[in-house]
Length: 293
Image (cartoon, rainbow, N blue to C red; front, side, top):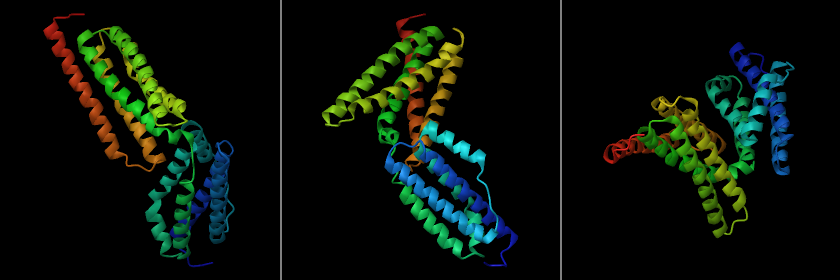
């Protein structure tokens, strides 16, 4: 091995060696509960290759390392909650932040360039082979999520000024939200059936769940705050809207390799614009109809 490697380059090699070993263990652990034989095989292949890369870097450092238990636990939990595809892609995306360190290493260890290139290309190919059910129905979830955000955000904003009572607003929103959930789910079922799809029930289930969860989260502020705190409830509801959009957009951007910023801005702009317009409609309706609740 090259005996003239600088301390800075050796430090990068140690970091890479540690990451390869830890990620190898993460892939092994996730493969234990990932559904589908092909997914398990792919994850185990990734684990094997990471371990092989670890052995290469150990040849430079001469150090035997142990996996980082905290990182292993973190990604196992992420995989169980959000799915293994999201977890492993999030983990791989994190490595891109160390590009400057790898450039430093390449100046002293030419082998690192080919190793890293092969690793990136092969891992990208293997990650694209992962087939997780939840990602097959992202379109259905987006449908339910978008519709609930736009429709319910607008309705609650309009109810807020028209009714000026958090309990009445929550009651109206709940009735509207639950009715719309069944309506949206049944529409998705009929649409999938008309297309001859055999997964119509699953598709409508994902749509309905996404819609219902959004309904519950948006109505929650009106149940938490007092009757006279309707404006505070409205402000919190709009914050929740932004957080839901940001969270779901980030999830799909990582799991499906899609742009985050443009999709987030688009969804947030639509939802908030509808809320503002509906709020104004509620004010106008209250004045012209002379209703005072």
